[in-house]
Image 1 (spheres, rainbow, N blue to C red):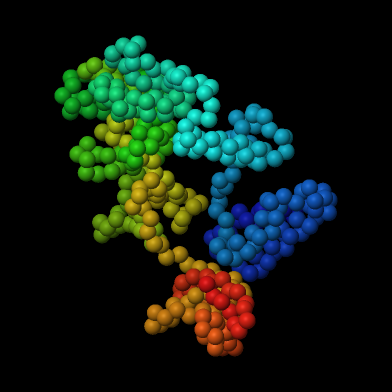
Image 2: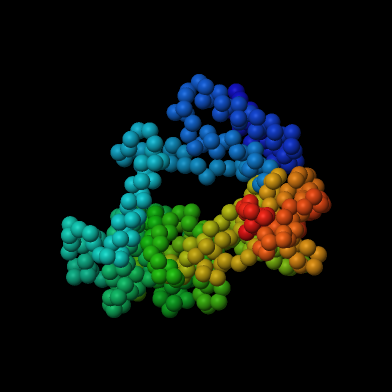
Length: 417
């Protein structure tokens, strides 16, 4: 019951909407500490895991960063059935898989630098496609993603036009099935080929793949599947669109080649009443909204640029309508973002003065509701490079805090870094 009361407070919509007060934070802190103590008394030290230790710090995290989100990024049992089917020690599943994954990553990095560590499988082709036995026209299809990755790397330097065309449209991962699609998709595909000067009429019965492996614009082999969000280059090479892939189609032969297409909802910028694009106040990224198009919605896979990430706009997590995009593979993504700092008592902070001078102070008390703190100032000590703590106190705003500092007590004063 103690833990149930704490969980109800964590996911309370009333507290998320109206905000947490000190009385609420103190209550959940006492509940979680009580739960940890009772668990240790009843089950012994074996129950004192990292998760139990983390739980007693939730009150401090809420005081500094507000309440938790209304969703969890935890892998649930249904999502790890494949991992549980492997051999493990039946107790620390996460530890077993983490050790195994770290060994695999180490071996991959080692072989890339020093070559294969074993001659087992040397000279054996690890994918099914064979150039000598290929019958034109063809498209690439491999079962595991590892084989697709090897195929793309092995044939990337092959000058044959059929191979280069097939590589540009990717390798289908897994089984390929035939399905019936709406007439709007068939019409989109017909218009695409007509614009290319290819007179063909596309039927509604088409091949469908679950995933495709492509070489993105950064030279990395990536797997694109249903639910993957990516950037797609427009036909005139001037605009990048954002699409969440819902369907992968294989069409052909048309003019002697096979083509791969993707379809799904687009994410377009939102506009205010003055026709200005709405951006987020911190990240300065465009606020996006999902739209389904009937005309010219299907896009060829060779225009896919790279993967991107979408997450709900933080102002309305209960009913997310808008999204923000993180182009995490873009090398020009990084930029300075001003994020407010919520100090704790006894921490040392760096403050920007009215004349842009930097001051140092020790936090005495914090008023989260008014976003203000009472601080005790540091001044230069007699020894150069050291600081002395004075008795002068002032009330400062959170907006004037520019960073946190580490303090070391030495002979003659304090060292502040």
